[in-house]
Image (tube, rainbow, N blue to C red; front, side, top):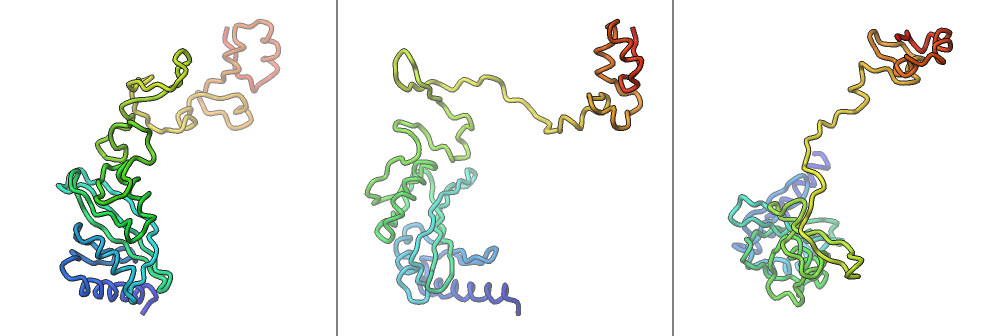
Length: 240
C-alpha cells in the first residue's frame, strides 16, 4: 500500500471518529485531494471546534485560517471555511459551514481569540455576520465603505473612487469615472502579427519575400540618401 493510500485511510478513520462522536452536528465528512473536510451544522460550530481542539484523538490546537467563499446561485450563498492544524498528530483538517446574507454564524473567538480578526475580515469582504463577536467591524476597507468587495456580484470597478483634493485639502470620494470603455484584447503578441514588415536589423536575417523594409521606405525620395542606398544592398530597392 502506498504512502498516499495510507494517509487517505488514516484521514477517513479520523473523519469517521469525528462523525461518530459529534453525531447530528456533522453533516458530511470526506477526503478531498488528500485533506480531511468536515461539513458541520452552522449552529453547532462552537461545539465542533471545542471538540476538535480538546479531544485527545484530534488535538487541533491551532486555527490557521478562516475565510469566506461566495456561491451566489445557492440559497445559502456563503461558506465559512476553518483550517485547523494539529502539531501533536501532524494533521490538518478543513471545517465548513454555510449561511446566507442574513443568518449569523456563531463566533469562535471564545475557542480561538485569533478568530476575531479573521471573522472581521470575512464580515468586511463578504458581509458574513458572526454572532457574539466582541468587535465586528470593518478591518480592510475604509470607514463608511459601502458593500462587500469579494462578493461575486460586486462590480470590479467598485462604486466610488478617492483622490486628494488640493482645494479642500482632504481626501474626497467620487463616483467611479472610467477613463476608457472596457475593450476586448486578443492577447496576441505584437511580434507574431508583424510577418509582412521588416524591422531595422532584420536585414541580417533572411528577408521574407514581399516584406517592406522601413529603412528603404524612409530613404525613398531623399536624393542625399540615394547614393548610400545604392551601395547598401541591405537597404532594399528604392523607388522614387
